[in-house]
Image (cartoon, rainbow, N blue to C red; front, top):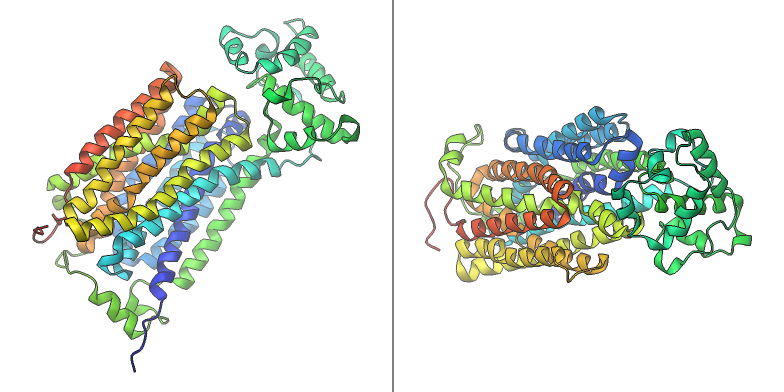
Length: 549
């Protein structure tokens, strides 16, 4: 009687996918929360870009050592440690009190996450036959993008949800961040206000009650006078004004059916929209508890991974002999002579193939990091999109990327069977950068004039970028042999240095030269990444003989 193989390998891939979901959930959530963090900690956009950069810099520096640690001490132990680190340092971010504590917490979070993807790659390498490696890698990578996609939407909902109507909506003096923007706006502020003409009656009424030289206490009193006045702003053109989800719900109620708390919350949200950056947003109170929720999920994930995972199929009590034989029979021995007891610095540094692969990762991440750091800011600055709507818009490109990864995993395995490893890995990485460049150029053009048309273009960009991710993972596994985690860590190190450059550099371009310059910068980076993608050769292992196809 033939014994059917057990299915533990699927559970291992699923556990790695769940870990990736949480990694990206924690990594991306700050892009939506950043406007509230900046107001709470009183820091500017440049400082926030530094905090974004801190994560990617630490993440890059920790890649190769963390990948080696996973090979030395086993992926089960190390992934559990990485998940616990995510929980601890994620909580530190939620407790930050100034820029430097935020910077340090983000840096430490980057270090704690650095080894997670190399460890997941090693787990896939040990638990999945070669023929399904691309598909398994795409499932794990799908988890990351899925977590990143829902991080935006979920974070926006949680931030609003953690500030119920029962929390007072009146303004206190410390919440008046910039009285000048209310009393005597600059030319730059007036340009911003022109983007929301439907709110001009609000600005006229408030400024009519101010002299232009009032103290913060006087400004506070005037604002609270409007906040406490039921129906103060019900005569506006509401077809042209977007409010957060709680404001929209209150708006649907007739003024005489609103409670005092609802009326005050509604008026406060209107004033925040009319004077962006002048009054601290009431939803600022929601970002800390939201991040603490994510930290708690890190503890849960660490526990689950320790219970479910084992370093190798033969060590798992739930895997029967038939499954172990199936996995081992389907794995190549490419690179088996490489020892995991040392990092192969010489081989990596002398390999042209690995340098081109790493350069492609640098340029790819310079362009891609815009989606997980600055996209919500872009939507707010250019289109004044409210938090829940911009959270949804920032979610959709990453969600499209997650779905595209699954297709990309199947596609790269199919190409390898038909065209060999070289083209089977390089075509998804290289050719599919072309639509990314086109989409970004369209976003910077005068042809896409609404937030939704730009979002659609970015959905295309994200889908085409992520289509090639399974091939990039499989490249590391194809060429790395026993050193698969180290090879992926090496490329991720350079890739996340690119992300650090992108988080700071693209932010700088937007601040100094405008968002179009930032978008064109991303397009150039994707062009260079595509060229590198066409040059890499997955048939050329780091150790051993080069394949014919």
